[in-house]
Length: 167
Image 1: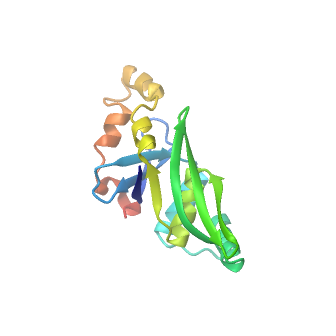
Image 2: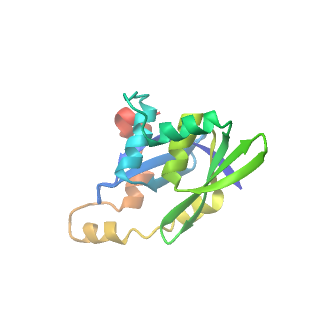
Image 3: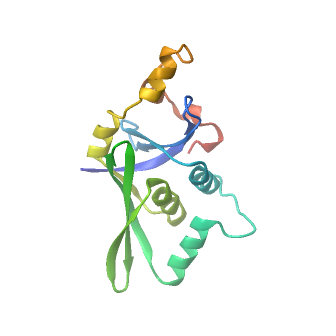
């Protein structure tokens, strides 16, 4: 089953300092944290903040290319999680028909934000994400560098925790 989700905000993993994009459904009952790279976080943050650069950045360039060749992004789906790696698909359409593109979730989300396309998450990804191996976070907890596991911290996040990237 697919659930439509929105970008709730960006956060930083307190144990690894890796950016996380937080997706939430409309009822805020389901939350999906997706660990992403710094550059991808910058691409998402710049769109959330509507920052205009003097020259097009990669995702803005791609948006313009798609627009000029009459390709529309219908939706993006975060559709799998294997070995702690998320997978996504971009669903696109042209006058000649529909097609899909395999993508990293961060790129798919950055494009969805730029094209006002819906973001969906397969419920099996939500189920699998509850079982992500947080052993690195657990190791730090054991060493006294943290009092809570990463899973507990993410469950306790509220919209106010996202600062200027809150949606």
